[in-house]
Image (spheres, rainbow, N blue to C red):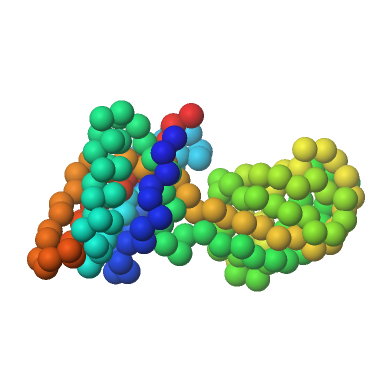
Length: 190
């Protein structure tokens, strides 16, 4: 899979979330809501991006990359600015597979995939899916095996995803300077 070139969009971009769910209004005024589809694909993002005042060479790189994705009909990997992070905190696992991680204002959601480095203790590092969010400062993941561990932890959320770009515009106002406007839509593929 191709990775978008390392040219950073201008700030002032727009991020849109449209969670997928079905709802049924009941006669007594209550409403029932259910997620629709696979759990990890419930909240696709759409980014309206602007690569403003970039060189003509950078604009050619972006356009060439996007034209290649049209030709091969493939998605690409892109990390929106400010979406990834690394944070540290503590963890505890008490004779089960549930690991509780405590990090002040962690900012993760159920279904996020995190790379976890247990810096102390004997838990096994790796990539884990957030199983539950118990508060703004704590969440759980499921370990591969039961155990009793505790210590310090570092989590990394890459923020990268798979995207497609179905249209873009290029504006050249000055010699050797260009602006590209494009919309990246998140897709979920194996």
